[in-house]
Length: 231
Image (cartoon, rainbow, N blue to C red):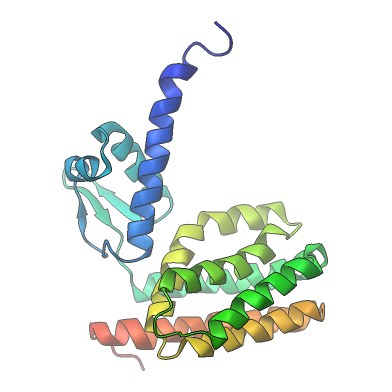
């Protein structure tokens, strides 16, 4: 027999756990599974049409991504969205992205920038009342993710990747907190204009302001509705 004799046994299980992680991750990011909600292995396995083993592995993976808490003798729970966690994640986002753009921008093509511009122009001029939040957050991730992926600093990319799922979750919450999608679309178009001008330092400043504004959307549109007050 060619190859690893265990591969035919291991690969299907690994594939199922990755599929389970992807599906559960999406439900958490889109807040269909809310913070603090218990994640019962048997129930998830039934919903996903698989055994409990890949679900258990998926929950361990999502714990490493910061989306799930595993509590001994109690089980798995969706990680809570908290003010402290938001501030920690967004402080790191500002540091990562403002550092990344200086070395990343020369590696981004004009065609990629134009693709981003067209994408956000469609969002800005479209019927935002019926626009799915998944489209907005996917476009948001495309822009910010591009700058990180083209950065020459490998360690920065690794550390940023560790926060990817948590950032995606907050991006969705921020989009849901918007009173007008055109506001964030306009911010993204301004960022894209600076990308087109190859103005790395102006772009870094604009990204920092944009991330701070996104944090304010969440503070005012999500946490304020949860009963939090801010000084």
